[in-house]
Length: 276
Image (cartoon, rainbow, N blue to C red; front, side):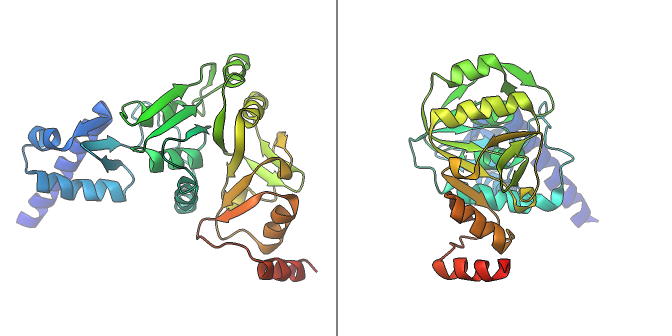
């Protein structure tokens, strides 16, 4: 019985910890201990759990909330089976970002996972995504530029002529874009206004990086964003079929797989044989 009561107290404390971080965005470790009336070592153990769940990230001086915002539950109901792949892709994408770099992040669940990986790092972040902006809003290490415009309610991204005008005045070293589909003709998204805004993002970036799980390959959507060879890098998971690996490499983009597998000339020969 005592074990049951102890577990209830643990869950209640973690829920209070979540609420505190959600409300404030960033809280010093000592303040958390004081608010919860526990030792800092206890808070650290709870934070270990929240970090494993992707809901918090510790940095110098305190803790950032990196979970869902209570008012922006935009990614609930998505396919849970793909979150593991999306998170792995986000980790691989984060390795391409250098400290103090200026980057652009658009909307989408995989891009949101990337933002969670980057919270707490010294960066200049441009985004048209309200959920992504919410992650960085309380950061004292990141400069945040939120692009204005018409807010697409289902995804929480700004699109349209105002967003395009602002983006056309900016320059970033890397733009990370998510897509709804990829086939041999290029990359697609399902919203015409979003595609127009993403084209402006491509024009504003020195390098464009598409991050997409392997389920997006071999399918098209309403509007084509650009050809395969018009982006610098594609990051996906290791389940990408061999023929698609060869098709991407032949088209020009650098291919990065989330399990750190790097296609070699031998891979290209194997992929060729699998196409025959």
